[in-house]
Length: 213
Image (tube, rainbow, N blue to C red; front, top):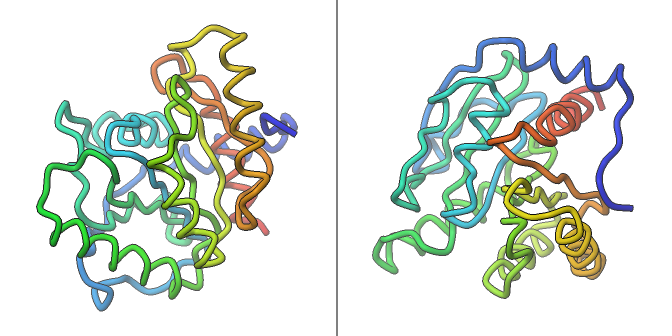
């Protein structure tokens, strides 16, 4: 019901998948720039200060594969990273605190919506939520957008090392209650910490399973 559980075999397959060197492929600002469809494509979305770049760095085992910064909102395009020739990760523009004009933000939103609707190889969107705060009102429009596009998405709680075990249980329970009302949401939640390497192996296993399905 809460944290995803994986077998040792699944964890090992995930490790082996990400043992390959992850390569930056391209940044996409227009739909006609999208590459050919991959067998497996997974996307990562989240508020601009949720720790998305740090999580992607931890996931791929590369320090600078997704650039981290003290300035939120750096990602302004769909950034493609290749795990293998058949498996791609897409870093989506952050939402929330991006320092940009309303017209530019609206442009990103149009790009994201069209991408979500029209990308056949997209298996799942991982929506990152800061475990210290849980799902906030400002996150709901993104969840609703994913519901309307009928894209399967899954919540990943980040920065779990910043809170104590009882608080983790509380935010997990609250998160599951919220996503139970969203039809496109996956019922299981990932609990992660990039700093302490919590939940990284499980997230790799999740992506590997998607590539095999």
